[in-house]
Length: 318
Image: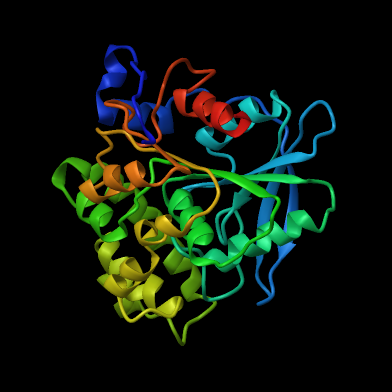
């Protein structure tokens, strides 16, 4: 049995899921950190930027960090996790997905919750440095879904990848979309939608033959964004085809390395399918922790150290 009994008990205001989610995203002081950017040129002519941070002593271990929807490597949750890891002997490669590093990407495609060929390119880029004999994958929200799919859909992957952590992860994309559509989550959906519409509008200038004003006007929800852009841009019939083929829950049983999933019970982004207790009870290499509190990527203990950050380090060093 690998369903972990959680001992995470935050102070009073952080017992509210919305408070912990919003505080952690908007008000937690950003940890001070040195990040050195390298550009990965992709096979299709596009690029991704990776922000590296290094342990004080030379390390043979690196963690690849993957952000969530409309995030980037500068987000506080990425910087917080990075700081904990580099202070404990790990180097960190914090990925900016296509179009998320502050510069428009070049191709019609961007990123999505299942675009594992881009993660494969990142892993290959790091292995070519011939510096690391141990790689860990840590993903938040969309990034967690991405890494679980990557690990479960392949018959093999580089032997240097030893462990993986998925935090606040929507294992069912359709279920999580339905959760986000609830009125209590309007502030999050609105925030995502504003950013996504802005990116679509900017990309229209580069691809006028494929992106129209009439389609832009149709984007009034996250579902419509996926219908209008995500699905057709990445080869899916529609949004529901995209959700079905890329939800990580179906891939988890195939994962062969140790994996730790941390999903709070009061995460308003997640649906019931995102808490696979039965699966965890049958898989020896899967650890599932469902704290009562934590919201969405909001596992506050102190501003300097979050529960998710200490638990990730603990799992990777086991």
